[in-house]
Length: 114
Image (cartoon, rainbow, N blue to C red):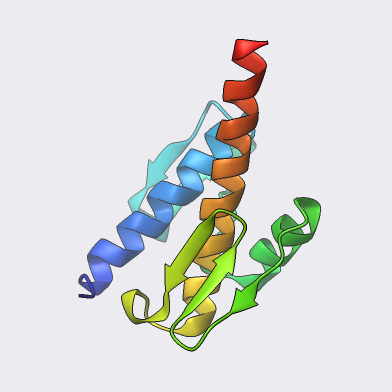
């Protein structure tokens, strides 16, 4: 079941904020006028879940590969269902961000145990 467009947008921005925090950006502010967020030095937060110009470099930096099925795409430990997103493109971008977050959190958890 798909959520509303507004709820979907909020979930995308929440993932982007979470990723930015994991990447070390502590000063992230909501900016409703531009329908997004700002981070260090008033730069726009990259739209990793919504724009290939932001997501593509993230994908290559973390070596994310995508395997496509009829109704889903898999990226490492992450699988996304196309029906839960506005388009296949958006599903894949969302999955890439989710996988990078998983890898960063897993790495941080592994480092904390060491």
